[in-house]
Length: 427
Image 1: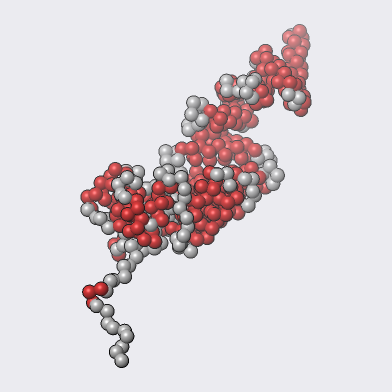
Image 2 (image 1 turned 90 degrees about the vertical axis):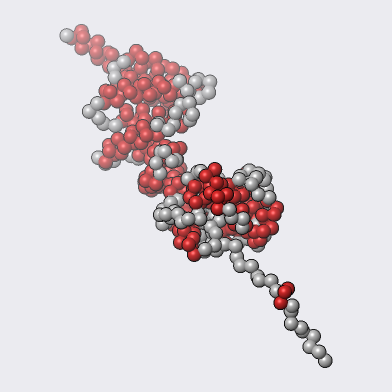
């Protein structure tokens, strides 16, 4: 009986294709477009791939990765030109071209050609706003699966489901951590931000976990600074019920400022300066170093005002102006009179943004502070006018404690005037 198994026709043998790229890929850690470009196969690219996965840029980009270098620099047109000049038509090069210009390739054909990485096509379409639906996880794993879950978390958050977003981000971080710890750190940081917005104190531990995973990711400076700032803000907020956390917030405000400059992340930089100043102004003056903190606070507030303008950021501008005025009033100085005059002017600028109709109590507090400073300068008539309006607003809104404080200043002005008249008569 003939053997049922016969040798295959050699002409029908197909070589099983190898992986398109070496995993893990540096996906998600850096911003678009670099954060979604694939590093092609090749020994000459391995050290760069490993550095990028670790959150570090290469000291020198090798030939063949010009598009990645230009993409990181924000030069999309140059990156596309570099890919076109290479003449490469393999799936990875075409996918990278698609990241830079989604109209440059047929998404369906590219998805099929990428195989297990095809989900990246749908992920890019979602991230750039070409699709309203995040892709399904399917068989995606590692850094790719983590990015898919992160996109689904973004979708859940947009739908108002913060709890689902946190769960998805935590799953994404767990999936990324074995292969790409910095990406896991950024995902934990994103989860921590959602927890903070929801008033969940667990956000502190999540922020701290994120920073631990990002240790050594030297070129993810903006992401690390955002997490430092988020942690500082969370500790600062919780200091209302747990005062010891205020001191813990300061190193994280400082950490954010050590990582970024105003030119690359102006709003983050300004927020860190404003937060640091507020923390210093809130701390009790129990040591001589307290006076030094007040001086640093004033410097930080002036720095923040270089970014926060009345036209573009009116709420932040008014808050920083007010804190700067307060710091000038209470900071000991050889030029105290000049500081008080500047404080009066700062209060006046803030008053222009706080009307009786829109923010009566906020206006009243500024008027009370300004009236107090004018009284210290001896400008009693102007001080009384400010204080009378403040008292009226406090009375109207039944803030009795503030009414008593304003009356105290008015009584002190009356005593000072009476004393001055007595002195004049004696002379």
